[in-house]
Structures are given as structure tokens and as C-alpha cells.
Picture 1: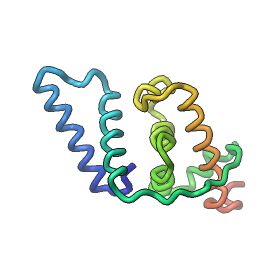
Picture 2: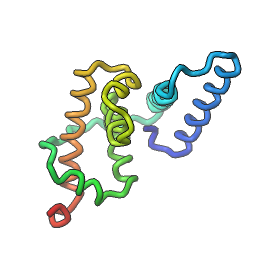
Picture 3: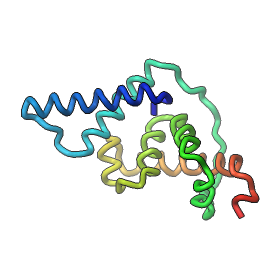
Picture 4: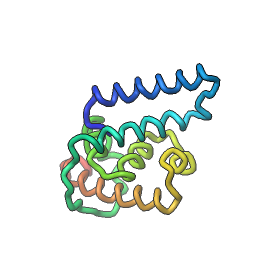
Amino acid sequence: MTGEASKAQDIFQDTLREAAFLAAKGEPPANRYWFFREARWRCLDVVAHGVQPEQRANESTEVSPQAPEQIEQLEPEQLAIWISAAPEPQRSGLALYYLDEFNYREMMSILGLKLNELSRALASGRREFQAWLNATVPAAARE
């Protein structure tokens, strides 16, 4: 989310320190989602005070049945770079969606979104991602 591995590592360590501090005070985080929410807010704060991505008009297309095969053609870094350039809350929603670890209720809890907001962010993000995939993965590789 930060675009820089060193910043992400610092945020991860700060989040763990905060959890340890809370636990030492007898107030441990309520559940595992606390870590994701806390790290996300810390990332958003760092990004808000750093260089902002250039606003761009994203092309959009319907999600293709071949999308999983197209994604398999990507390096993990390519997916991470594309997601990191998305605006919030789309960026966080897509990151959680593609981690494939959380159901929608858990994602809503982590992101603090209502179902319609999450659905809108994921749907528009996936359509924009599909347009990018179509431009990035050669047509021969998709067949």
C-alpha cells in the first residue's frame, strides 16, 4: 500500500509494537482484524503525507472468465504495483480480495465499509484491473 518495502516494514513493526504495548497493559487487540485495520490506517497516514499517485482515468471492461489464467501470467510484484496505485478504499478492498483470506463480512469489518460500498469498490476495481490485464498479458497467452 505504501509503494516502498522499507515503509511497509516500518509500519508492520510499529503495528506489532502497538499490539505488544496494548497486551502489556492488559488490553490486547480484540481479534486478528485489529492488526489489518491498524496497519491499513498507518499505511493510509504514510501515503497521505507522501507522494500521491497521479490521478488517471482508468479504462474499464467486464471481468473475463480467463482472468485467473491471466493473473497466473503476472509476477506477484505486478499485481501489487497495480493495486497500490488504486485509490482508497478500492486499494485496500482489492488487496484483501486478492489475498483470498477473508469473506465479505470480514473485509467490511477491516475496512469499515458497508456492503454496498465494498461491493462498488471491488466491482469497479476488478473491471479496471481486467482492462489493465488485457493490455498487459498478450492475447496469445490468454488463449
